[in-house]
Image (cartoon, rainbow, N blue to C red; front, side, top):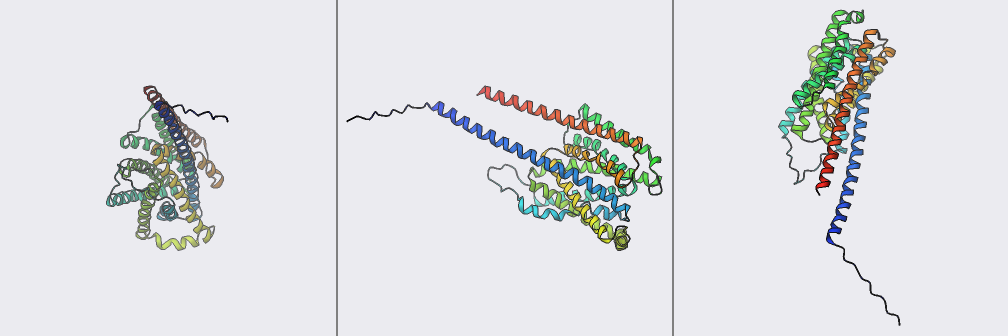
Length: 377
């Protein structure tokens, strides 16, 4: 009868087991980081589409409202923030993460948040009203190009409030975009007509520049709030920071409609709209929806990256609006305006290249840190 050969188990050294476990854990971490990175880029792409598409379409509809018989500045301001009800379903899909004992961050009080929402809402209402005056008194192509002045303002506010680095490329962009807006300022004679008189052009130019500076301040303050106050970049926080200030801004615009007396002429305005009453209502509704979509993209980019990056991406729509305005509203595209457009795009590309250099530098630094850590262990 054959005897079975006994099986011998070789002991595995504890150090080898530890190395194997460490390698497995490291692979899991790398896999998670990779998935998170893909998810981050997916969110950034969605935010970019929302921002560019929403702002461009809403700007064109705003000009359409004025061209076809609309004349209420407060209504034009109201629709820029009144689309916030479409955000309500997002509160149910993107709820605040549950607070854990290990979380060291303390949420701001309800009073603090309420004051922040009210302050942002008032700033937003004023900004919307200034933009509505600029849209009324300027051709849409000129309005869009002057709006690019928000880039140098944003760079300045980011430098002061958010310690943004002021490199040579950013300085170049600031100077070029400023020259672009200045060219349109001195070219007012070629823009004046029965619809856009010289006086109205000056008012529109000043209001648009003021609105651009207020918008840049708004973006920089939002970034500061995300970093220093809410200390959260979740989508739920982004939606709240958009919903409640928009509610406050809309209430301010409704008060403005009553105080200015424009509320009493809205019925006559709707009846006199050249494309009909249904077209009037749909223009206002879709303008409000598109502005809200654009705001969602803007807020998302601020929370994920920075206010400066959000502003840069918003400028991507700059070449689109003036070109579309030539076809839809028969705006003039003379030599000065083309040069202004080229300069504005040049300024935008300077910002993009600076962001590319910063991103490359960050990746190189992280890679060197990882190599140093690996060598040490």
